[in-house]
Length: 88
Image 1 (tube, rainbow, N blue to C red):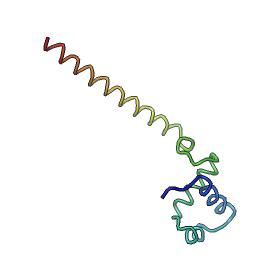
Image 2: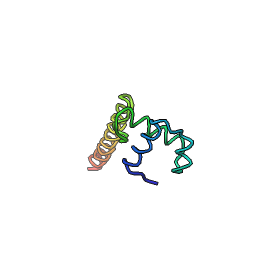
Image 3: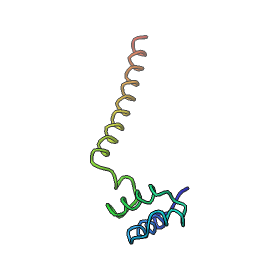
């Protein structure tokens, strides 16, 4: 189920105000782990966007994976070009 940022913020504020996670879970049908996660994200950055809540190491890994994928594609293209050139 997709939740709006406004709803997530409301849940995070309820939890921060002292309402027990178990009460919120029963009232809204959201797992305690989700409540803790939303509260942590909102408290850390004021947003729920994953990009804003990643560590520098996580961002670096994502960047390197994209770069690695691009380089593999380039190698495949060069291999195909070499095969074509060898046939001529």
